[in-house]
Image (cartoon, rainbow over the protein chains, first blue to last red):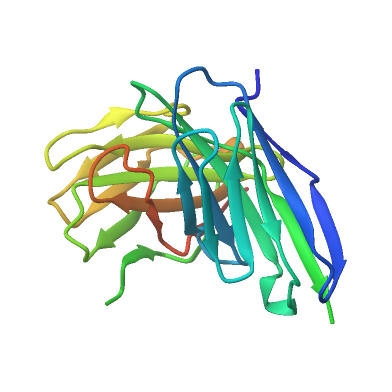
Length: 110
Length: 113
């Protein structure tokens, strides 16, 4: 059973066209939910950690939000340099492992 | 400040050959991890080391061994490579086990023929 599901798999946006990426999870007792950005040929780069429902974090054009069963990564007025794969991961309370989703590949067209 | 350094960046092996992937971090982190990334599968944990001197199995440990050589270095060994081990391997570190703020290396692309 998948612990983390991300949608859509791929997203193409025009520069300036805002949108949201979804991460839904099935673990009980969430310890934390994490967003990473991954560029081609590179390792994932940490963006945000969210711990409880209602929490929000922002960084430049990105804002991450968390509910009881899903998280959204909102991208406002994206630029071509925002093109990357965005990964979501969750950690269960009392556990050591992080369960990663398969990512959303974002392409922003100038 | 290099962060997490992995070598080699690319490797091609024949079935049955062995090799060791090297990883070193210069952030004085306690915990280190080895992941593999396959299309459509997400990142999966192979082994981790919560602190110097300890190692534990992750989700997919079969066919691999690890050594935490010291606080900085954590190596991953494939004793007898199989085509199913063709993947991209990432080493990561964090200050403390389970903080979530993982710092990743740039990856090793391994092909087993």
